[in-house]
Amino acid sequence: MILNDTIVALATPSGSGAIAVIRVSGPEAINIVSPLFVAKSKKELKKQPTHTLHLGNIIDGARIIDEVLVSIFHGPKSYTGEHTIEISCHGSQYIQQEIIQLLIRNGSRSAEAGEFTLRAFLNGKMDLSQAEAVADLISSENSASHQMAMQQMRGGFSNEIQKLRQELLNFASLIELELDFAEEDVEFANRDEFQNLVTRIQQVLKKLIDSFAVGNVLKNGIPVAIVGEPNVGKSTLLNALLNEERAIVSEIAGTTRDTIEDEISIGGIGFRFIDTAGIRETQDIIEGLGIKKTFEKISQSQVVIYLLSADKLGHAELVSASQESETPKSPDASGQGDVAFTKNIQVELRKIHNQFPQKPLLIIVNKVDTLEPKELENLQQELEVISRGVEKSQYLLLSAKTGMGVEELQQKLLQFVNTGELRNNNTIVTNSRHYNALLSALEEINKVQQGLNDNLSGDLMAIDIRQALYHFGEITGEITNDDLLGNIFANFCIGK
Ligand SMILES: Nc1nc2c(c(=O)[nH]1)N(C=O)[C@@H](CNc1ccc(C(=O)N[C@@H](CCC(=O)O)C(=O)O)cc1)CN2
Ligand SMILES: Nc1nc2c(ncn2[C@@H]2O[C@H](COP(=O)(O)OP(=O)(O)OP(=O)(O)O)[C@@H](O)[C@H]2O)c(=O)[nH]1
Ligand SMILES: [Mg+2]
Image 1: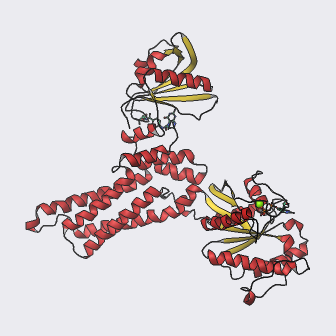
Image 2: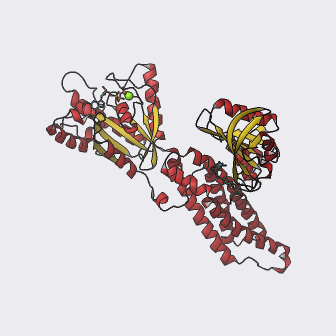
Image 3: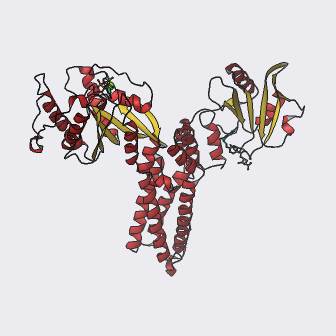
């Protein structure tokens, strides 16, 4: 990592647009751009005050490349903390490249991914968790992920960690001071006060650690698997939820072979729907692989939608609960197909439920547009029977084709999400690196607690306190190394 040179990159997306922004940052940024810019006012860019905007031409010798707006930031008063120039040019890719090449010929270098924000971090403009939040903010696509990233970028999480760290540090210093007076048996660090602090740190850490369960799903979108027998309308439902023709739909059973995923926002929260290959006994190797994948997707999902087709149900005459474990006959063409079919569904459902007992199951009957009102009544009863014994299940009727009941489904899905932490504006941990550091910090704090219980000597306790401090420092970036920074910032886009 070379950090004392001047870097340049396009800050706006690659491609052509109305306007593009090229950003230059580093000790020579102003000196490099100044002679390449002729202001309409004829004023020299170099002499302009910080945070001012100037209209003029970017020139390459006698040639004018573009008419642009240039902003100037004098370090350390800038995003990166370095001298920074931003050039807003016309959004042609040709112009963008001509200007960037010109800047490179005149002494700047192409920035690496995340290098502007890396510099902001290294220059103390933000701590590491705030820098990570910048990337999350850029990729946020709904209200929930936006709110969490914004809170973290503005330092909510960092402040909480910093405060604990500072208090713990004060105690560590006092305890370590005792070591210098070991012979005199003095206690600079009041043990009762220390116990209070340790208890408080444990509580905060536990709260933050618990929030990750929510934060992780809210950030990545709540995965919802749509499963069921072939041809029940899983892909049609996916399309209805996404409001686009995302998956191929046909009357041929076994249309979907591989899983198809896409995300939408419902009530500000991201849901990732996973359409799967219909579950059935099959000789087809590829279809079989698809079905295997379906079960993988169920295990990864937060909620399972088990879809049924109304045109196959409709007979209230059902198997009793005691027979449930019996292997069902496969549906046949002899007219008794429906009963066997329903029994089949019961077995299928219980299979899923037994394999994933904690997973909420939404049993949904699709194609209700094909039923007569009287048949609908029977269906209600039938569903009661089908879902009996499958805890955490709810059922719902809909038609993916007409859209009836789809909104109700969305509302039901929202009920599975705990949005309390979001509403209360609590700090929510969304980053697994932070989560792991918090777990390690708690482990060390628990050792400190044990030390207090055992009346352990200060020198031994100091070791665990230092370890806990180390893990706090990992989150905010006081403790770091080039590999870790490389990893974090390599996942940024170029120009950020
Ligand atoms: N054109 C442009 N838009 C942008 C950015 C940018 O770098 N350029 N940002 C980049 O992500 C975000 C805004 N973030 C910024 C943060 C700090 C400063 C800045 O100049 N800070 C100085 C002065 C503060 C002040 O005026 O009080 C400083 O911190 O000292 C600029 C942008 C989003 N929009
Ligand atoms: N009448 C009616 N037909 C529907 C409805 N939903 C789906 N269909 C039809 O059912 C057939 C199967 O739909 P798909 O969405 O391909 O079914 P699938 O469950 O994805 O099937 P596989 O991918 O083979 O597992 C298609 O002909 C759809 O048009 C509905 O609500 N009402
Ligand atoms: Mg399908």
